[in-house]
Image (cartoon, rainbow, N blue to C red; front, side, top):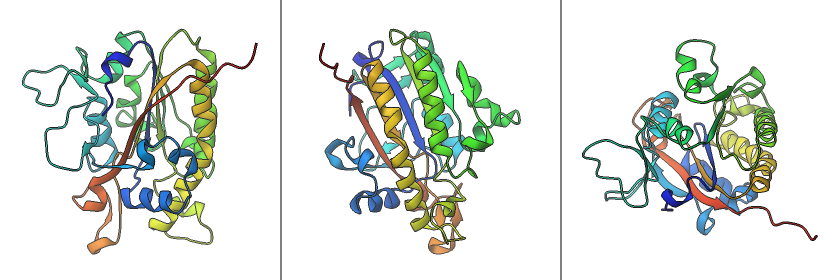
Length: 272
């Protein structure tokens, strides 16, 4: 685990949730060379196997924003990168960045970060009070149908918007950018024609599309300076395993998710 505490204030923070991505799908795509852009940033070239803090988007993101990122999938008390201060915490260490605020969005905001949410799935669409709870945590939040689950170029549009907002903020002002990638969520069969039903194979095709779309975002971050990057799934989903479909249920394919954390260095300056 990285030590987050010394990075806050000098590094931008990027949090990407690959909504609904299963660990086995991420591993398969990696092994088959379908995610080369993500692969070059994964520590040791591998996804870390973790357990999701919730079984569906709202529950998991509420936990993530409170500092409860997916937990390493092996026994032990695992220190956390971020934590909202509360008495009796057993997973706060010297490496943990601890906030007095109730969530890491407000905590980073209090440290001078501009907090930006680029929404994807319905819990970020701001079309109802429920769909506004999570995006309203941020200074800025964005959602449109073009960024949502039915748009075949959603990730490209999300990345373009994120790059636009990063370019508008002076590089001396730190940014916390959150991107909820919607392409992995159903209907992901739109990325694997002629398929008409979702499956692990169609989700893998969606992940390959996401991988192709991410480089401009990472380049835009690197131009601003170094960044702490967290890439993870919030939960998986079932495609008929043991008779289960969807998520918001307790099955290994739902609880087991891919996770990665890394520091993106600042882009090297060109020759004078």
